[in-house]
Length: 450
Image (cartoon, rainbow, N blue to C red; front, side, top):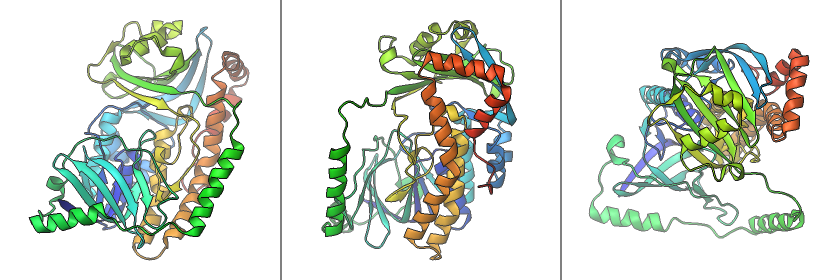
């Protein structure tokens, strides 16, 4: 059995996790970046880097690395309804279109160049915070179980996956969902030493018997009260939030202006965003119930979506899908509220479901790492307690993301009604300033502004 000692384990190697690992490695901390997927990979994403992200990338020392990938230039947003109505909204600066296939790989290279160890295809099974505030992470690799011992762990996994997180002090108070598994190999990249058979047995025994402290009376009271509140507030008449699925593919042959185009139709919406090398990213968020009979492949679902919107169908007529560039994710829950800390600090999609219509999701993911990294550094240096880190990070996240998330959810919910879509487009055509103001309300303010 391999045991890896590190200062920081960042779980999830997306944008937020990679930037977090880079930032802490630059501070001199032993940093491990772990993800269950193999990279580079395609993933469901609008692949739109808003104008606001430039400042964040520049401050993180990444702007030159990203612009070297030759992203497409994007200057305006166009909203288009199924009946052909549309409105153009100028962006507050030049945005970029860039595939996650290229962007994630570039950020991993930057993290590794800073000294972080990047380990992919490794499934995190559980995380346990011990009484001394350190953490133990169970990882499944191709050779079996691995144990990572870290002074702290930071969660940056995607919205649809999280590890089983427990607290050895109060094991009954917390729970989580399974982080979908994978296979990988930790010992090679990490250079961990192989233990003797006797040492391995002792490690496996201690691993199976991670000490826990019986649940405290206060913890039991809190859990009972929480269960009581849940029972009292259940409303049998309240409709649950609809389930969505996200699908995407790259296409050739679709000629585009420097616009990002958003097509609105019954059952969802679809975006076209130019990216590097003359390609176009086609990504859609679709109601699962509305597309149950549309087929199971990504391309079949995109075709079914286009059939609901004649302007979109005409737009995609000459497009050819790029083989291997398809991705899908389901279910996508849009009602998940902001939760920046739950035993562990959480970054990006791990802390909240960022409404896709914010158009600022990648910027928000990167900004969350920018907010958390200096606090993590202070904690590791003993300048800040764990409680202080939590308090300051939660306050900073709510102050920074609260307003754009509220407006993004409002805009997201309005698109479920065709009448609301028509009204929104008419108002935007009548008052372009209102449309620009609504777009601005869903965006992050520059770093340093409250």
